[in-house]
Length: 82
Image (cartoon, rainbow, N blue to C red; front, side, top):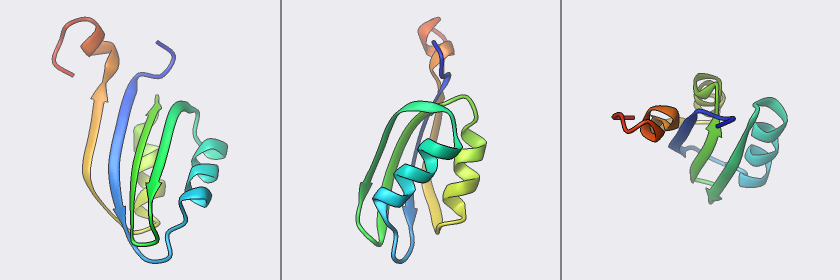
């Protein structure tokens, strides 16, 4: 698999723009299967990437991040706990 980590989180903030967040992530971080949905106060993000820590750092710059899940899809594919 090209991208190893399934990264999911919520961002709580003010004046959040899902289109801007989507565009920033696509242009700054390699990955696929990006979903950015929500409103100007709360965004749910899902992304497959090899560098989830960089995505988390960017999202933390936008507001408070929580419900963070980073799963290793390679381990899961091998039948191991992800």
